[in-house]
Image (cartoon, rainbow, N blue to C red; front, side, top):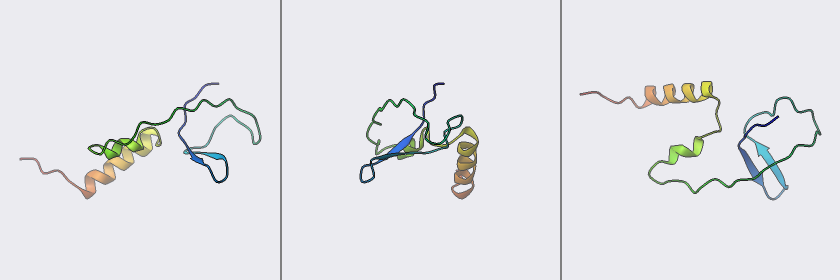
Amino acid sequence: MGKTLTARYDAAENVLRLAEPLEGVKDHDEVKVTVEEKPPLDPERPWLAFSGIMSGEQGEEFARVIEEMFPIEKE
């Protein structure tokens, strides 16, 4: 099984916290982890920080809510 997930590292507890459940893996199963640091946030496009942490459905819902709250008026 191979899958890329987003996780946040908690140094105080020495724990990686996944942004979504890890399907197909039982509690206490061992997995192989490859760590890649995310590039620093782009101050011109801070929304890119959300990349990879939502499912497609969640992303669509998030975009819909943003569009409703901040409509762009067309000329």
